[in-house]
Structure formats: structure tokens, C-alpha cells
Length: 391
Ligand code: SAH
Image (cartoon, rainbow, N blue to C red; front, side, top):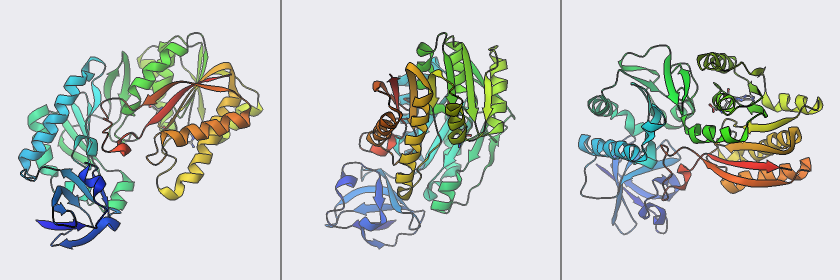
């Protein structure tokens, strides 16, 4: 096993259980090759943790085990997966849904491994090079513990480039039907694991979708970035008078229409196109809505995107505020890792000034609890949102 020594003064976060070590923090490496498990030491040669190494990545080491007596082998993977499953049991997610994240990467202590459950089918996402070498071990463990009907591997293109991954999308065990029906808080959805976005469904918004219900009775709702209709369907469930659902993806809107039928709701008004343009057009037409949801895709992927992304968040929120009735409700989100809760709040505050609206924050919104937020790894809190009361 290779060894890596960190620079003096660059080891504090690592000692405090933060999993990421940037390449600039490395003093020297000994026999460490990419995709290996390595032993990481401080500048005085004291053991800090085991980690997965990738010299091609900006985050060169992902720490995973701080106990020197452990071995990173099949039993170790099995133990970590067990802990994650027990945590979901403690959370009692199955009371709400048969679709949830059973393993969330660094937050569950195996960097680069995500596993989502869709009923009896599972999707694995790999985003760290070293995990490629353990994929068979992981599949073996999942088969034993979960008795799946099928496992599908899905690789995110961004990670594939960043980490130089070799794996690609495909069925890795059993069979996967074209369409899978899942349920979430008494609403049914049809999900296509192969062609859907992310692992098929935006599981992380479960609690926030449910929260919309109490704000929409007899109201008109505009669901911007609606995907397969999560917030739209929950608005119908909550008794909305009318729902407008907007997305740039025709496939997403097609699945929204299917999901609406499946649940016996009336069809929403569908708007297909770029949200940035359509919102402007709606403002021009002086349209008004009582409730607006803004759930954009990741607008900032790297640090150089941040300033431009903040302006985009501001713009979206400003258009939404212009479209809201007096005392309207805005559910607004960012899932960009490098946009903090305070950053998003700042963007909303610029939007309130430029739209001439007074905004009160009713509630803070987070990713659902099956995507744990680990305190020693603040980046795990990636989904931030607010419920705003707009006067
Ligand atoms: N609210 C959804 C998830 C939204 S994901 C849910 O609860 O399931 C983000 C969505 O934004 C995707 O469906 C994607 O197709 C859409 N999208 C991306 N860029 C867009 C743009 N410029 N205009 C409109 N929709 C866009």
C-alpha cells in the first residue's frame, strides 16, 4: 500500500474527519499509484487515515477510514453498507416511500459510491476512480443484503471526465424494466432508470415536495424546472386550483403527463422551453401566480462558474417575485455544491430589491434525510432552499 505525507499545517481538516485532500496539500507520495488505497500521514509521520488516491483529480485523496487497525477489504465495505442501511432503518424512510438513497458517498463513508433504491431495483453511481476496482465486491454485498431484481450502473459524465473513469452505463445484475412504478408520500410516479435524469428521479426533494401541499389550496401554482412533475403533482394533491408546469425537456414533460394520469389528477398547463426566457415572457404578459417553485439544475459546477451562477439565481428569483401575487409563496432552491446557503440568500435578497418586493423567510429547506448531512463534511449539505413569503 502506498503512503502519502501531507504538508505541515495542511492536515487539520483531515484529522477532523473531513474526507477531501486537495493535491496542493500533499508533501510527498511513496509507492502510491492512482486508484489505490493509500495510507495518509501528517508531516511528522503520524497516521491520519486511509483514503482513495487519484493523481488525476483536483481532490487527490478521499479519506474513508480513520482507524489504523481496519483494513479496506470486503468486510470493510460490507460494514459501511450495513451502517448506511441501519441508518435508513432508523429514519424509517419506508413509511413514506419505496424510493430512497441507501448510500450517499462520503456522507456514508465510502467516497464515490451512491446507491439509490427504486422498489426492487437499484441504481449505482460511481464517481471516484478507486471504487471502480471494488465494483464487483460492492455488487456482491448488495446482492446478499438487498436481494435486488436488478442493478443498473449509471455514470455521471462530469465525474467520468474529472476522475478518468473507465466504467460506463449499463445493466450489471438481473433485469431492469423500461418503466418502474414507485410511490412517494401517497403519490405514484413512473421512473425510467436508464433514460431519466440523475438516477431516474430527484429523490432529494421528497420532503420539500410534500411541504408544498399546505400552501396551495385553491391557489394557482407555477412549477418551474418541474422534471417529471414532483411539485406539480403534490400541488394537485394539496388542492391547487390550477398548475403550470415548466421544463426545457420534452421527455420530462412527457413523463409528467403520464404521472398526472396515473394519479388521476387533471392535466396541468405545460410550458416547454428555457425557464429564463419563459419567465420573462410571463412577466411581460403580466401573468400572476400565488405559489412559484424554482428548482433549477446545478447552475454552478466549478468555482469559476460561481459569480455567473449567482447572477442567474438572482435573475430567476427576480422574475418569480415579479410574477407572484401579493403575499405569494416562493419555494426556491440551489443544488450547486459551491453555492452556500448564505450565497443563495444573498441572491434572493438582490432579487427582492430589484423587484421591489419585501420577502420574509418562512422556512429553511434541505435535501431529504436519506442524503445525510455530515457535519465534518459541510459539502454534504448541497441542497439549500427557502420558503419565502413575498409581499
Ligand atoms: N423539481 C423536480 C426536479 C428538477 S431537476 C422534481 O421535483 O423532480 C431540474 C430540471 O430542470 C430538469 O427537469 C431539467 O430538464 C430542467 N432544466 C434544465 N435547464 C432548464 C432551463 N434552462 N429551462 C427549463 N428547464 C430546465
